[in-house]
Structures are given as C-alpha cells and as structure tokens.
Image 1: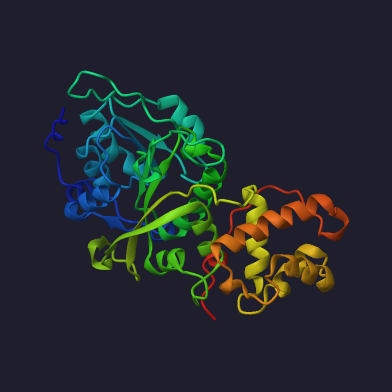
Image 2: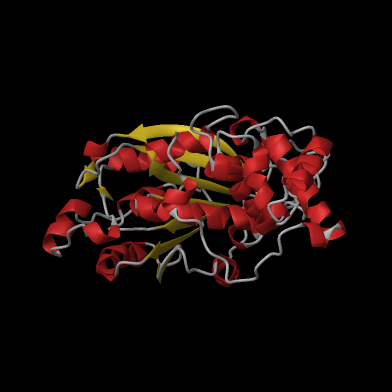
Length: 361
C-alpha cells in the first residue's frame, strides 16, 4: 500500500529563516535544500519502500523529507546540531510511527544497539497465489549469503544508511562502517546493508582508484576490500547553502562477498598492513612493510618473496593481493611472533581525513 504524502509544511529554507539558523563553518555545514536533488539522493539508495533506513546527519530535514516520501517502514535520523531538532521534530509529528530522532554525534553512536532497540521486521510479501515467501537468510559470518539459488546482487539490504555529511566527518564515519562490514556488526547486524553517502568529489574518486593509479591510497584499499562501490551522481557546489569550495559526489556501497581462497583477517590487522604498505606509496612494498618486521629488510624480503610481491609498489598491488598480504602477515605473526614488531595495544583511533586521503605525489 502506497504511503500517504507528507502534510503541507513550510519549505526548509523558510524554516531556516524563521528560526534564524545558519550553517556553522566550524561544523563544516552546507545545507542541501533542493528537493529535486534530495529526491534523486533517495532514489540512489535503490528504492526505500518498506526499508529500515538510518539517516546520518539529518540537518534541517530536506533529505529526511525525501526519504520519508519514499515510504520506509522506519527512519532513524541522527543529528548532532541541537538547532536542527525543531525542524526534524515536525517530520516526526507528521510520521510518528515511522520516524525516530536521535540527538548525537554519528561517530559516537552504538548502531547495533540503536537498530536492536527500534528494529521492525519487513512487511511479508504475499504472492498472487496467497503464499507468503520466507525471508532470505542474512549474511553469515564469512560475509556470503546462506540462501541457495539466490544471486548475491538480488539480496535486498536489511539496513539502508543514507547521509549528506560534512566532509570532515564522512570519511572517518565510512571507516567505522567498513569495520562493521568486516565482522557483520553495527549497521550490518541484521544482514546485508547498503550505504548511500555524499563525499567530496576527490575523495569519491580515490574510493574508485584502481591499482597503479596515482590516486590509489589507504582509503582505496580499505573501501575496495570490504565494499562494492557504485558512483551515483555529482552535486554542483552551487546547490548547497552556503556553497562549499569543492564539488560533491554521491556514492553507493554494498558489502563485498568474502574473497575466495583468501583467509579473512580482522579489520585492525588489515588496517595495520595497508597503513604500512602505503607509508611509501611509490616505492617497493618492502620499504613500508619493514616496519611490521622490526625494520628487518631481510625478513621482509623473504616474506614478500613467498607471496611473489617483492617487486611491487603499494600502488601496484591488487585488491586480491592486498587481502593475501594481510592474511599471510596475520599467519606469520602467529607463527613467528619474535620476528614481527609488537602490536601496541591502545584505544582504537580513527584514521584522520588527511591520512586516509593522501594526495597523489
């Protein structure tokens, strides 16, 4: 059954004027108010009817309106700026059974607890013969579907994450989502999830960067290890209020199935390896990777020789070989702990924006 349209309410731009709310430069705020673009943003998620949707960074609610119009069964809006709450509460009043507002920082949210608190199962689909099909199984712990005779591309995401985030938050938050994808936690706790997010155009370009590209960096390796990346569309900077200095791209990400023939490693181990590998992006891998072997080049060279990667540079290593490298390092660490650099146990730290998006040299 089609969901009723939202009741008439003031335009978002008018609400901003009435409430005297302006974008804060220190919060990197740029409001996207054009409904034709926010509708396009919502469509880029692939259809949200009867979906469980989390919007990260609701802002004044322009994109939230488009998401609600798409007919999700639940929409959770996360917003840090208290000034935006009255505008978002108008939407909650219009759709109280659907809309949940969470005042908080998207980087600090316990997504799994949030989902478990508000989870609503999808509406059963009744076929023309009256039979209610059984829901497809979620991803198993290896990241591959347990449902037989079902193409992975046909599995509908259990959770949709959508957001037009400030540029300074988007990349660190993406790294959190990749960590969740690695062990099927957080937004992936109910099964496959899809992320439709806006990034600085150059950052999006790095996410797609293939091996041997001058734009290849840690972000490229991390994103392509755990997700399939689909370019959706660009947003002209003049569409924002105030206009940012750069262009914006909307990107759609879905969880990769596990790489066949390669042992899965935990996210921390993979991140440690790619950080070392890309420390010297244009030099042979040995120069960066040596930091994981007590700076012993002889051990490093022997290790890389076994993988036939001794002559490769960081930018030349394929996604498959990067996964092999991380898996082999994890095994080597267990077998010969005295030959590897000890891991300093400390509080997990998100890679900073400038670290992830190292400019091409």
